[in-house]
Image (cartoon, rainbow, N blue to C red; front, side, top):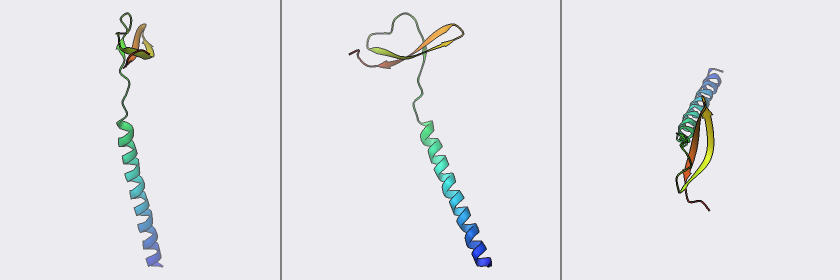
Length: 71
């Protein structure tokens, strides 16, 4: 009976360890995603840039531009 309980406890500990490793790995991968960079809009977008998103905070318009030629 003690051996069975020990094996069960060991199995649960291993499962929790593996789940923890998976969670940490997932967080590290998620953290490496590139975040969009917004800049205050001043007139038109520069040549070769494409506005992909806009954001307005406190009455100031910000744009997210992605490099690349216009089709």
